Length: 410
Image: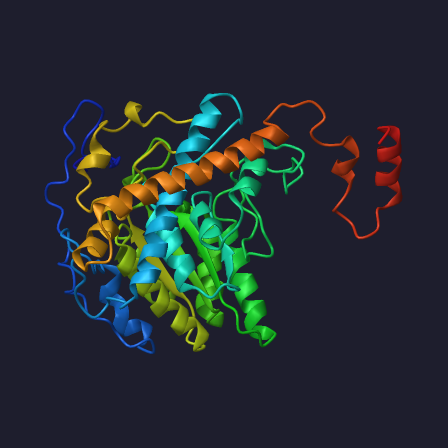
């Protein structure tokens, strides 16, 4: 051992901790409109640089720039903005409901609303979504009733999941929303498998799935990417890089070494990196990836570069591991404020309209909350009949479950 250097390990650490000033110095991004828009049939090898840049459309004054601008009409943009406002109002009420003891758990998507909502609007209504636990905006954008979401959160007698699923882990076959799993990244191979089956059967629908940047370290993600790349499955894999897991920053998952979009390069999968707080850019990138999938050109990996403005969940206190004002200092702003600025700039919105839309969203959520709470909140005695636990598993109930149900007096 003589003459050898002592070995050491590198443990990634965030730039700032509680009490520090948020530090985004040294970060640089391409200017809005600077990134070229390739043809959808461009070979993956020629798209390599897109995994290391950042696609941006909106500047910080609300101007839409460059070839990625999707040229959406004003009604579509207003619908997107109102849906983001509604989602944020829903999140705020449900977060308070948990603090009031009406449910056991809740997860907000504050600061990430554009990712689920812009993408849901860019997909066809019957495309299949395999979400993680921060994509409630997909259901809201597809018109799923807020009161049914609340029934599930409260696990009352009208809970569509019949008390069998954790709060926020929704499911709706009618709305193309696959059951959310608390286990990380399980939805990614499921999405790839569904997309392969769709192609194999001659269906025209594609699949899209979402996971956090930390979940890209899971084996399920890598197995799914292998299958997606090899079989050119019509699937879009969305990595939401919101900078923080429940207590560790994205460097622990490999974000110091390279981008998360770069993980697609090794699988021969086109990989794009987009400003996740830019509604227009997110819409345009999803539109591009969906067209590629529908043209039998295979999968796309998209990294959405964003920031989790709120806590990871109601079980989390982010003040224990990051500066309290870091979200306000995020250099790419807030998705709602940025789309609002764009609509005002083009003369299709105003401050008065925005205040009215906020109030309408709050009133809509409040009315749904009253209806849901009339049915009941978590812990109400007899919300679910004991016999229901034996149902919906087999087409015909086997003898041993029938016996157990009888023994339970159901």
